[in-house]
Length: 146
Image (cartoon, rainbow, N blue to C red; front, side, top):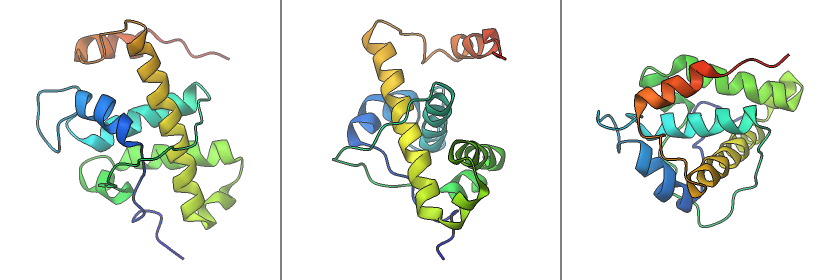
């Protein structure tokens, strides 16, 4: 069985060009909201999970530069764990972890849905995503729905 932490994530080239590159540095820089591409991917995945935005990937796909191990190795261990927890919750069973490719595909689809959700906001005039203070304000003003 393939190790879930080694499987590379997938995302559309369009989303890489229009969102990931826009909001994150190539790897490890410090001038955008995200220092790493995987952080932007995780952001999109959380948005996809939160807003129930699941979307099948369309070609062309971008290179697959990172995995859960990449996240763990760059101080993202808790984020990697959170993505797995959300994946389990959406699948409704721990059994999803017995099929690592399916688990990663599920995360990919929610991230893709999140990317499209973000792109739609941008297309409709939202322009505050690349301002870290505005991003933090948006996160902290959210109310948890019961």
